[in-house]
Amino acid sequence: MNSTLVRNLLVRGMLAGLAAGVLALTVAYFLGEPLVDRAIGFEEAHAPAHGHEVELVSRGLQSTAGLATGVLFYGVALGGIAALAYCFALGRVGRFGPRATALLLSGGALLSVYVVPFLKYPANPPAVGDPGTIGKRTTLYFLMMLLGVLLAIAATLLGKRLAPGLGTWWATVVAVAAFVLAVGLAYAFLPAVNEVPADFPATVLWRFRLCALAVQTTLWAGFGLLFGELAERLLNPGPATATAPARPVAAP
Amino acid sequence: MAQHVAQPTDTTPALPAKLPIGAIVPWVVFFGILMLVLLYFVGAEQGATSVVSGEDVHEWVHDARHLLGFPCH
Image 1 (cartoon, rainbow over the protein chains, first blue to last red):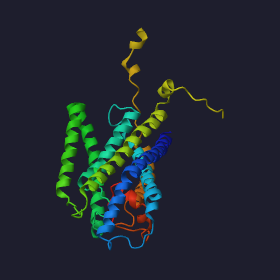
Image 2 (image 1 turned 90 degrees about the vertical axis):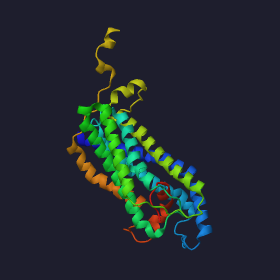
Image 3 (image 1 turned 45 degrees about the vertical axis):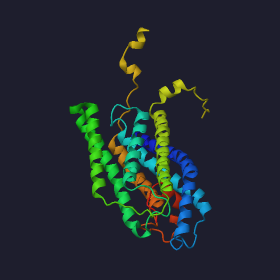
Image 4 (image 1 turned 60 degrees about the horizontal axis):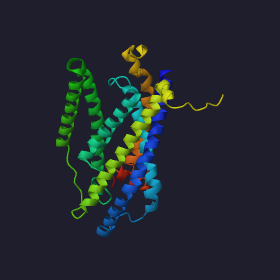
């Protein structure tokens, strides 16, 4: 019974992740691709030897089908993981219903999986980044992601532990402050990466990074709202049918 | 009218029941790892490390990697 509920939530999480991926893809295609093209234009004009000599996948495919593959798989994978995290969070993080828990979890995921690594190692357009340091940069990025998630879980547990003594408000304030302090220490001790070419246009870099943040915000806001609604209907089937007229159900 | 002010629990919806940890863990072990493998292929394969040789996976998801914030060449 409970195992079936976990499975149903997981399936809904992956579907909500796919749908949120479509929204994020729209943002990535219309806002992001023009900036990717400008960065590639800069790359080709300034360092012709550095570019890919043999084009394995054409730009037309990379910016459409390739982009869609990446963003949609990312949405499905994170939707599934978020749904499993939701199973743990449900009824354990405070007095929140299914929808509020979903939106809260989405916000926490955006913060810990994306914003925390992004503030230290922000997204870079093509032409920014030395191929020789890809190993180091990948390790640091995934380490920062892992730290963000682990510290967010630790802060949640800390808040729960402090709540009976300090009350919910101050327990939350202390837990968030501890999270900010720990993330700040990680920022201070992990090495910085700055491989932006000296003459790379600053506006393109700034807009690309804002756009990358917009893609993630769209993904997680969409996921939180969609998955919350699906979870609400699964867990509380009663009130949802009271406001919306019931659809005719085909007889089995 | 009197019936509407019966109990505060009538206006606040019931809080969701906790799912037992033991019911979640098997799904985390299998699907959690599957999802992480999927993330690896979108975010890092044929960058710092390669499971499949060549550059095809990297080139195919190239734009997504940049726009999703992963380090890419």
